[in-house]
Amino acid sequence: MENYKKIIEDIYFEIKTIDDTGEIANYIPELANVSDHNFGIHITTIDNESFGIGDFDKKFSIQSVSKVFALTLAYKFEDAKLWERVGIEPSGNPFNSLLQLETDYGKPRNPFINSGAIVICDVLLSHLKNPKEDFLNFCKELSNNSSLNYNEKVAQSEKKSGYRNSALCNFIKSFGNIKNDVDEVLDFYFHICSLEMSCKELSKISLFLADDNFTSHKGNKILTMSQAKRVNAILLTCGFYDESGEFAFRVGLPGKSGVGGGIVAVHPDKYCIAVWSPKLNKKGNSYKGMLFLETFTTKTASSIF
Ligand code: GLN
Image 1 (cartoon, rainbow, N blue to C red):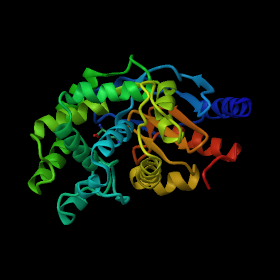
Image 2 (tube, rainbow, N blue to C red):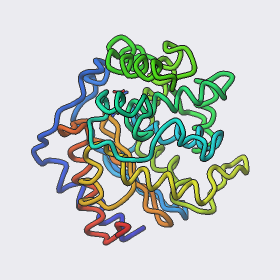
Image 3 (cartoon, rainbow, N blue to C red):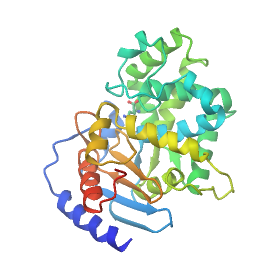
């Protein structure tokens, strides 16, 4: 940890003041109320050593990062049958694109673009009695953290402006790949996206993807080794939408971003690291977050490649 700590501090101060060419997400009006000066980093190793700097303890809207936990829960319920509903290929298109759904007969390319996550939410609705509460409880178990919660303001703000996601959900339903009521699926999707965490919490909750021996505090194994391998593989190839190649090229770790400006990256058998900086590049990924992680894996020589 000492080694990581010094490197994280150095990069933090180096990047903190650079000119950030990104822009804060404003298509969800409530997200635009967050100060773009926030910048935090937190690392947690599989031995439970941890270190954070900057705004690492402030909660933010994790947005699409929650698609990782939704996929995990759906995968537990469905195992390989899940891939009949959603694919595992990078889409090469923006996260909210409708384009391929028509030629793919309503089967989204992967679970991390919006269309794929909406289908995952539909799968979860078919399994969960109280979807919002049950999903939140699952995240609390994963992280051993009872303070996790949705941000109702963010969820409602996205609901009001969610025309694109509404179009995606209706379009998929027309192919028969949404089984539940469209409004219920969307309400659930907007809520899981509104989940809030700090970098500290995000790096901890993701440990189940880095540690083969992970069991929750309730003694439950979350994913089998093979399932965790597959989730990491999809994170590497699809976690950053049409910038997944770029993230693998520059950072070299499985990871997931959200339009709240958070990114979590996983080094299997070593650590999880979360970065938060709200300004996004053109592909919807945190500008400073990507730069930080690129410099970090380079200086610590700790990418998976
Ligand atoms: N809730 C956001 C949306 O559906 C999530 C997108 C993201 O974080 N990339 O647009």
